[in-house]
Image 1: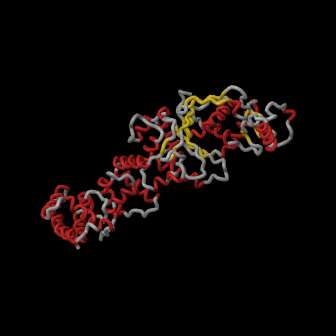
Image 2: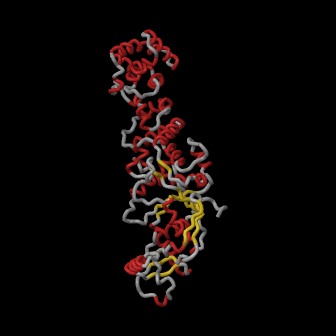
Image 3: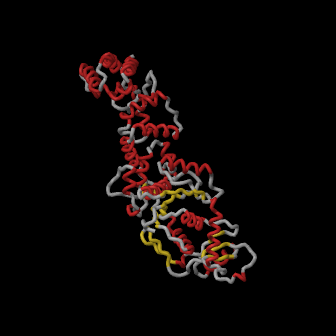
Length: 467
């Protein structure tokens, strides 16, 4: 199997949004396959018809698309493959690797109650395992795997190490129910085999499933994939991630204004490491990612670290790409769309906005000066900077700015000249200028704002504020 091209898969159940833990699992599979020229497949495990919904499937696909995790081929529906799963159960029957069990639910419960009373293992041992087919009644039956009774099943896990499970601790699991529907345990193995999956990378809550699934692979004479069971994500308090820790669904992170590249970087670092590297590009992540770098301890969600990385990715991003992602963020957050005028303004301003903005929400707040119309209405905080003295100074500054050379140096010289005449430092005029130009206290540099909005608009805004 080592020479085979790498094939990984992500197999979510469509019963809700794409959970942050699921997103990281998908990312690890994607990175491992993409870094080795392999294939990353998507399977929707929609056999639970009561809970699976098309809306949830759509939400999962949307979340993966936002994260930039492209998959190969069409997503596969597990439910539509039920006939193939049943066919494999019957093939195991024909091979003698499985058997028909006619025990009723009442008989199974009675067996367990007696075993418990006698202090024996309550794992059900079917009386039909070695029964002569001639004794089979004309009654409903399930197909059970004829699992080995002695010895051990060994999982050589790439993350957890060598895991050994005694076979006498595993029962003969049901592969096909009496109504002819396959069980999850069988379906997963058949799908992974038919899809050519070489590496199963998933949460460590599936570790015990791996032993049962290994037995199915062996019963069919199929190659067993490489296993890698990754620890779950915990909240900052070390407890299992839940609603009380904040956002759980990937789409919530998009709506909160985190850039996809920052999320990918952060999720990759959540439980995996490459030396001391914190900030890295997608290309570096694909090149560096390996299963050996995944730790065994649960990773803790750290919003400060997430914000820090997102800020670095916003600063490093291409302006045009950033603008497109900003538009998608506004839509995801249910905020008004930008007008063509605002889009043009943002395009001009982007160089001055992306430094030190950790989220798109912060970036939009800093961009208020280019999104707003005259007259600029200062918010409560910035209005305090526009007292009578400040207004008077802005009045003096307006003609100076109007006749200044329209460059950073020219504008700095014009402002410095007025500040000096009043015995003030440049910093003392920053507050009134921010209030006049943006109506906010959090903005890019006042000179960047002037250069972005242009001479006429700058002069008009200063004149408005000077009143």
